[in-house]
Structure formats: structure tokens, C-alpha cells
Length: 369
Ligand SMILES: [Zn+2]
Image (cartoon, rainbow, N blue to C red; front, side, top):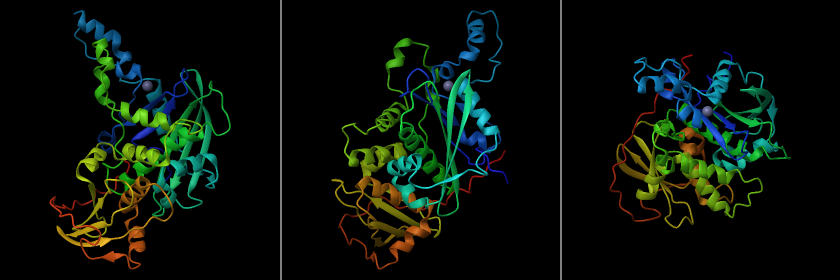
């Protein structure tokens, strides 16, 4: 079967740079639920999409009482048009392979620790093309990764050609947007769609009815700020590696990051063993990794010690284990079986008061195109 962006089953279909500001990015999202029924519903966080500019005249006519016609034109903007064109075009089937020292691959692996482990050497592919978006020339980069389970995901990042290009200047945004898209796609294909939930901007569509609402905090704003930090070319952002790792974790977990902060752990249901739940705890001081508490049928049975493979920030390790138990549980367990299984409470006496409830994985999401 020819691989296409659609078959890659994206949520973040395209990250596209603004021609007026190199640090401003618009995100085109595919509505996942509607995509499963064969519908392609795209949204964007540019002003044109949010204000539904293509239907402005019809809306004014309705408001003035001249017409009771509904909004006739499909909602969209030049960015969703570009994404629509991408979705319809075959891609990736013959994507050239690149080694991990390529700047795009290197940036993605630096920013997204789980991808360092999950995507083997030789698992990376890159395609670049010139495209035009509403008369504006763009440089499109497709970044593809094939994981240790042979699952493949693709990310699309479009750079406005009017901005000066310096060596490596494209690597940071590709690392941010590309890594995010790939990691989320791998989790979704493993049947855990809530991991890597995309930044929401659907709720912003009512902006513009009152100018003052523009200054109110909007969903997605914080994510954009996180990514803006990652956009710093020289990483002269005043952040330590630990802080940057925390930003990546927060971006990936989305609302679940607040849950993790509140309760000190997140649960991952096993995809291999029905009834098994992994409880991933965090050290409140972020100094060292805690052992993973393993529940079988609701009973706390064992502690797994999953040690850091290398010297990485604690948040990177947390994300790597969390992602790994979703995307390649077998591989994570193969490490654990080397005598790293302990009896309960082996690294702390905290009582478990929250039930560990196993939830079956969703069926592998396949494209319905
Ligand atoms: Zn747009």
C-alpha cells in the first residue's frame, strides 16, 4: 500500500511558518474522530481560520437581516489548503534515508529523548520540496521515522522561503514540531490516543466577537510559548537541560502533566498483559528516578527498576519510560528482566490509595481514506 501522509494518521498535519515572523508558527490539525469516519476536517490557529474569514460576508449578511442563508463555504485558510494538498499527495514510499548525524535528525533526537531509543539508526527519512502557499514560496520538510516495532510516522514542517536560512536554522523547529508529531503518532498507533494530545485551538473560534477577549489566555498559548523557547537557535534561552526536558515533557503530556504534578504519578495500561498497570512515579525533587510500581488485576505486585541508559535529565528519563511502555512495551520489559524486579515498597513506603485501573488499548487506528 502506498504510504501517504493520511496513512501516517496525523493529528498535527502541518506546522507552517509565518512569512512575516520567523518565530510565528501556525498549526494545522486534523480532527481525529472525524478522520476515522472518512471525513477530512482541518483547522488552523491563524486569524483567518479563527475568524472564519471566508464566510465573513455571508455572516454579515445574516447579521444585517439581509439573508438567512447559512455559511456556505467550507471553513478554511491558506494553511489548511496547503495541508489538504499534502494529505492528497503520496509521500514517504521512497523517502531517502538519513543517518542520525543529519542536523534535522540530530535536533529531533536531542529534543525528544524517547525517539533516541525508539527509532534505530537508519530509521530516519527526510524529503524536501519547494511548494507555494497562496503565492508565497515555501520550503517543505517531511521527516519520517520508523520505530523499533516497525511503526512509521511522518511530520511536515513548512518554512517560509523569504526568511534567511543559516546553517542549522531549520533544525530547531524541525526538532520541536517534528519530534512532537512523531512521538504523538507512535502513541496513537499503539492505541493510546490521549498521549501527545495536540494543542487545542478549536475553542478559539469565537475570538473576534469582542476585541478584549483577545488578551484572555487561550488554549494552546502555553504550548506555543514552550515551543517558542525551543525555537532559540543557539539555545541561549537561559534554560538548563533539565528545564528544557521538563518543557518537552509538559508539551507531550498536555493536561496529563498537571495530573502528574498533582498526584505524583501516571498510570500506563499494559498492551501485552490484560489487567496489568504500570504506575510511573516521580521524585518530587526531580533528583532521581523512582521504581515503576506494577499492578496486576488491581493488586500492587512488584517494583521494576528501569535505570537510565545514559546521563539524561530526570524528565527525559520519565518521558522515555512512559513513551516506551506505550510504544514498545516488549523492549522496555526486556531490559527489566535482567534482575531488576523487586518486591513492593522496595524504594519507598508510600501507600497506594488510588486504584490502578487497567484499560484495554484502542484498536490500532488505521486510515479510512
Ligand atoms: Zn491558517
